[in-house]
Structure formats: C-alpha cells, structure tokens
Length: 458
Ligand SMILES: Nc1ncnc2c1ncn2[C@@H]1O[C@H](COP(=O)(O)OP(=O)(O)OP(=O)(O)O)[C@@H](O)[C@H]1O
Ligand SMILES: [Mg+2]
Image 1: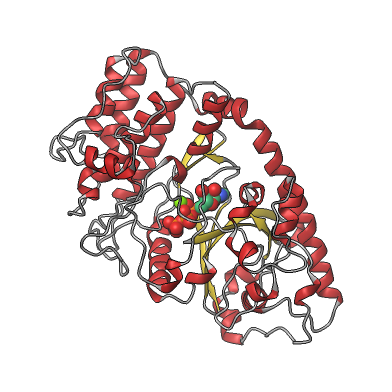
Image 2 (image 1 turned 90 degrees about the vertical axis):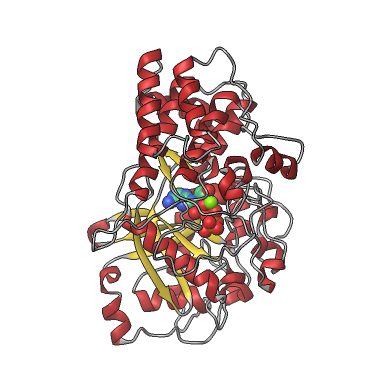
C-alpha cells in the first residue's frame, strides 16, 4: 500500500542526512480508509522509541499526499539475507539467527508495551511480523511496517469479520481464524521467523497456501527441528509456536529471554558485530550497489534542483512540487525530466502552512530515489513506470542499476501531477509482499488493479 523513497535532508552549513519517505501508493491516495490506515501507522510507530524499531521522524501532508519520514535504514531485510545466504550456500549461523530474533522480540515488546497518556495500554499488535518487515543495519535488526498494526485507539482497522491480514507463513492460528488477537500473535510470528532462520523453511509450509492454512489451523504442531539444533533453542522456538495461546510464551520479552538464555547455554552468542560481519559476507555486493545507486540518485536530484531553479515558473508538476513548496522542503524526483515542464508558477505556501511546517522549514529534503534497494529491484514490477510510460520512462527493464535508476527517474507527468496530489514520482512502489493469500484485498476499485509484487529483493 506504500511507496518508500530515500530522501536527503539538507540543512544549514552543509548538513545532510538521508531519510526514508513513505507515501501511500498513488492509486490509494484518495481512499479514505487507506489514509486512515496510514495515519494510524504513523501514530502507532511514532510512539515507539526503541533501537529495534525504525524511528518515525515526521508525518506530513501536502495536498492529499500523506508522507511519513523515517530513519533511513541502510540495510537489507531478513528475507533478502535468507534468500542470498541460501543461494550462496552459506547457512545463517545459529548464533546470528538467535541475535536477529532476540532483536525483533525486543522491538516488538516495546510496541506491545505502548501506553496512552493516561497510562492505559494501547494494545498494539504488529500483525505482520515477517522477514520482509525486519531490516538489518550494522548488525542491528529493526522492525518496520506498522501498516496493519492493531491498537486500541486505531481508527481504521479495516479488518472485518472473515478478513485476515498478514502473511500466512508467519501467522498465528488465531489470526488466520480471524478471532480476537493479542500480543501473543506477534510472539508466534517471531517464533515462526526464528524457525525459518534455523531450518530454512516456515513451520507450516505446504504445497499451497490453502494447505498451509489448513495445517496451521489443525492441531498438528510444526515439524520437529533438526536434532543438530540444541534442545534449549528448540524449546524456545516451540514455546512461541504453541498453537494454544494460553500455553504459548506469553510475551515477546519472555521469548527474547528464552532465546538469549538458550544462546548462552549453548554457546551460540552473537554480538551485533557478528551479525554485521555475516550480513557483510553475504550482502556486501548489494550494499555497494545500493551505495552507488544512492550516489547516482543524489547527483541526479542535485541536477534536477539546479534545473528547477534555473527555469522561472517551472512546475515539475503537482503534488511533489506542492509538497516542496508547502513544506519548505525540497522533494523532487531523482532526475530532471523535461516532460513535466509547465509554465505554471508553483504554489506558494500560505503563512499558516509555513508556520505549521516550521520544523521542516529549516531543511531541504530531496527525494533522490525510491529507496536504493527499490531502484535496484526488478523494475518491471513498478506499477507507475509500467502503467504510464513516457518518452523518458522506458518500459523495458533496464539492464543495470543505473539504468534501473534512470527508468524510475523520469516519471510521466500524469504520475506526478494530479488534482489529488498523489505521489508516484519515480515510480517504484514497495507494496506489501504477496506472501499471504489470505491477506484481504480491500474492496476499492483501486485495489482490484494488479498490484506490484514486492518481493523485497533484486
Ligand atoms: N526506514 C526505512 N529505511 C530503508 N528502507 C525502508 C524503510 N522502510 C521501508 N523500507 C523499504 O521499503 C520496503 C517497504 O516498506 P514497508 O514494509 O513499510 O511498506 P509496505 O510493505 O508497502 O507497507 P504497508 O503495510 O504500509 O503496505 C521495505 O521492505 C524496505 O525495503
Ligand atoms: Mg512491508
């Protein structure tokens, strides 16, 4: 449901910092339910201050474009790590798997423990704990994507009876059954993640997702782990994967403790450096590509900025331009594109707008690309590039990261200019992975369109 961009915050005296900007996908931007879900995500995630949860820096809106500024996590997801490790025939060391899972538990527990101003528990449940939604940077795992998180005050819990949200491979049976949930659903998902990290397969894997669901909702426990996995570790995992919620490990803090105790007892302790070293061993080529992409995108953004400044009256169209103007931040696509040159003066922010956005006014944010990982990702999955090709946006897949970048760099005017101010500039969208067939498709016409499959990798 979202597109994620990497952006550059520029301040006085050469201050620069990368941030991630998440916006609702263009086709959903006008949908009130999705707007509410997005706002809920912002409210929930921004309240969590924990090193194992991606930090929210700002929530903004320009026109009808809602955006979330987050700490930029310069790393890959656990899903990518698993895939590349398997491809390279380099199994993830047990100690690394345990460290990742313990980090995830710590982050989730912080979310579960959130309270409102009156001290009342908010009852946050992530509901989509999965390897795709955990990013690793410098050996530290960070939970992202509270897009479908549940909380007591959530205004837009779009789940209706019979609907299921989340990815079925990691889902607790009660979540699959659509009954009332509590934090133990996330405990189960964290356990399922660890089971997969340790064994290479998800606990209730079957020939089809329907069969997996069937297995999940049966009385059968997950298949036993290999005997080479020490017993205390197996016990920690199976405690989390207990189908009966009342017998399951009660909290993520308990699971974290169980994992760390098991790690200590079996000599499988990994520090963040150990994790970072392993990630580097498997994913250093990707990290280098990402770095290059970001550099390219940054310089393209600078070029674009110069171009915009040199042509009076330029309107690089619609929402992004308005966002820049209203917020006092510079948010631009990653490369100049003459297609969108217009002789319309960009809107000036009203005094009130400028006041309300004052905290941002000191910085200049240049969107330099969809998150570099996204720029490098299979471009044919990009809905905006595909759906609205232009002379500057080739529809055939680019052959190199740079070409991929170029292909997303020049969005057609139709994608950047819209009365509703949607932001799909640069085109590549990161949407919820299609891992869970049971994940509901909201009944809007926009949702009926083929959604890009974001498989978290390239
Ligand atoms: N803070 C961040 N820093 C770097 N990359 C990020 C960040 N947040 C998200 N990403 C990238 O964007 C991808 C998609 O993000 P996210 O999971 O939040 O969106 P989504 O799955 O579309 O969410 P939603 O549940 O709102 O539909 C992530 O897998 C990751 O590759
Ligand atoms: Mg996600």
